Length: 288
Image 1 (tube, rainbow, N blue to C red):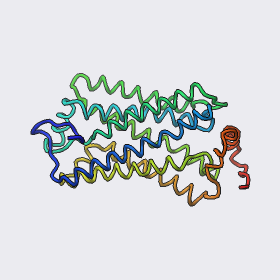
Image 2 (image 1 turned 120 degrees about the vertical axis):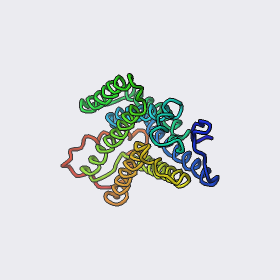
Image 3 (image 1 turned 120 degrees about the horizontal axis):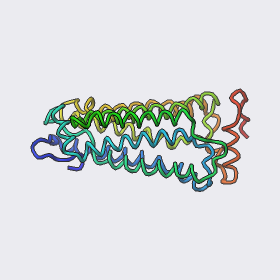
Image 4 (image 1 turned 135 degrees about the vertical axis):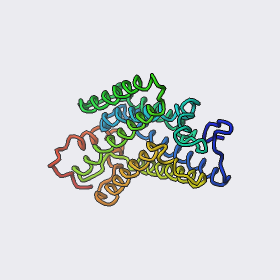
């Protein structure tokens, strides 16, 4: 079965073939939507040979988030030991709440985010740099994970350890969106911020949430939700901030479009720098 690893009689089976097909379609739709959303920034960086306008804190926090999520998904999907601990806690009639598309997405996300971070290192950065606050947050997160690993080691409490990684990725997901939302509010515009990425992310989040609903309906059990609280929170937090960005772009500040910042390759750097360094108390120029 594509959606989970079989453990003979210990693994619950699908009761409805249509629901199983729907589950797979939704899962891969979310994977494609989320995966495609990574490429515009990478392509733009490569075309401009510059990362001016990209928030470095976002990239660092995002890499920590996706790395933690990969550890959770891959461990629960591939490890029979951790799966057995999951069944002991939630029941052997339950299904593993991690599908193949979850693992595929996590791997892809880590690779693309690492590529973006590499671009940050080699391309023109202007005066931008990673903040000390971001470095501190990431350092505390990985230090916490390391301490929890040694706590889990004596009793092989691997499922508990995975909940720690889940908590880290949910925290990173929440934090990474806040600076952009505040910046849009202060500047009263969304210049330089791709709404296409947000629409794709929103679509993936809704599909991911519906995927879990379909599985729960088929199994007549909602253990799938509180047994994988990280995945649930990931969808809800992402959708919440996506809605904020959509409202900012189309309702609150619809006068200016991000496309104005990327009209031509030659204008990219100067225009984006101008938007980033403009004082918050200075009004943006009128549209021409």
